[in-house]
Image (cartoon, rainbow, N blue to C red; front, side, top):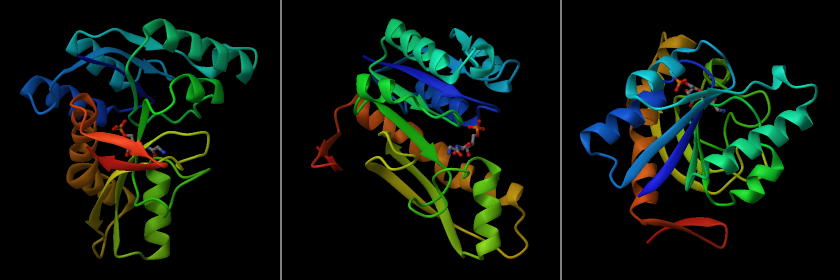
Length: 207
Ligand code: GAR
């Protein structure tokens, strides 16, 4: 059984997609053991509660320094000891110490086709604002393993989504979620849980 911890910052629609997929059997062999949010009072924590899973709030704002937060966050993750950490709209940079402790065991969903519209400053709605500003006709989402870089780890899966005339960032965000994110992330978790993917020479290969 793959034990997972999902980290969130806001609405938690990706978290919901994961919980729904566990319930419906689209994700097998997986147990959600906790949800960690860096923001108090967010909808994602309510979703965790409704699912009957512990919701933990850990905000950098509650610590004297980022280093102290990083230590506490990594220690909490080590205490929970998941087999896989899932970043589902988690807008806090993962401490390097945690990346090395959980090497190859952290996955992230990003709302663009990496390497487009990613890296520092590209998160949430901003990604879609930039895509519309640039006038791309296709965007999408990417699930990847997390390394020390920002959105730079080995890519697990990507799905393209059309940009349509008249799209606003909000409309495009919703389409990318519906057509790509809510499908790709549960699929990737199921693939990890069932040993279907591995990293070979820094690239993800299907087993
Ligand atoms: C999602 O679109 C996710 O891909 C994005 O934040 C949103 C969270 O929505 N993540 C990033 O931008 C990470 N760089 P949700 O809370 O409803 O799942």
